[in-house]
Amino acid sequence: MNLFKTIGIIGGGQLGQMMAIAAIYMGHKVITLDPASDCSASRVSEVIVAPYDDVEALGQLAARCDVLTYEFENVDADGLDAVVSAGQLPQGTDLLRISQNRIFEKDFLANKAGVTVAPYKVVTSSLDLEGFDLTKTYVLKTATGGYDGHGQKVIRSAEDLPEAQQLANSAECVLEEFVDFDLEISVIVSGNGQDVTVFPVQENIHRNNILSKTIVPARISDQLADKAKKMAVQIAKELQLSGTLCVEMFVTADDIIVNEIAPRPHNSGHYSIEACDFSQFDTHILGVLGQPLPPIKLHAPAVMLNVLGQHVQQAIDYVAENPSAHLHIYGKLEAKHNRKMGHVTVFTEDADEVEEF
Image 1 (cartoon, one colour):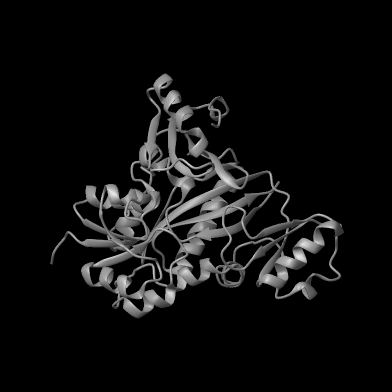
Image 2 (cartoon, rainbow, N blue to C red; image 1 turned 180 degrees about the vertical axis):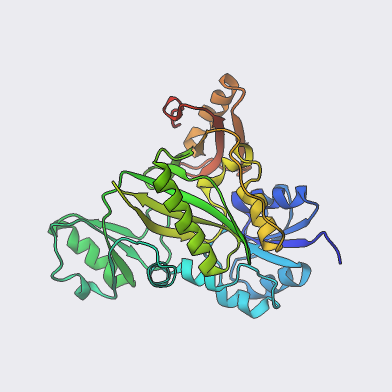
């Protein structure tokens, strides 16, 4: 049996690139499928240039690879089901379908995994927005297709209803009660189909709905951190998880509420490349190959800063002044405003000292 595999990654952005690097270090070959020939992963892998829903190209990738994985959730699940052979996609397409649709996701989290979520209701048209209690704040989110704040409307008063009604009439939605949280956290967990391993709890700061800064370990009590990890493990076990998953959560005064899951390595876990003995990408590759997973150790407290298009020069200057900082640039050719271009990881005991770009 060949110990070294050919791994196919659907999506060649920075997550695909970092998955590929982890796989290459372990001796595997990587082929990526991406619509852009100059995608980030093209620097470290062969690329099949095709749209993500091109069933013929997905079939070509499947035919050339032992194992397939994906770097983001908006992949054509039906197309994948049509081309993969048994066991070739260890993450499966059920996980894709759950994370592609907020209605399925909420139902899975609340009713199957049994974790706490914000009170919610399914909205199929603007009629479902009549007669609810406007003394509370709500977030209306489209069931499919929203990310980084797209496809969302916050409802604070009757003035917000016309826009919310418009959104509700355009697509199926989920109406959530707004959670009055103290901070946002996430937990990375990886599985190999049987066992799971869990990373330290991460504290996340967002700006304009885009992650700006991650602090590890999160500045919460040990009891809440343990609870967050247990919830992530509960979700992973219910999914019989293969590969890496991120569970995003809110911390309230005395509880943890699960917000959403991402079925892949996550922006908030990038610090793990330097700050942990195994990164979220290492455990993703090990997990999809069904190999034993190590317990994760944090070497030292760390902060990760996102580098967006408008921050590239600032980040380069920062690393010149702080040579012990770790700069990652993803190789995207155009530095657009708010586009994720890279990240910086810094070891520090004082997270407040490290300012966002």
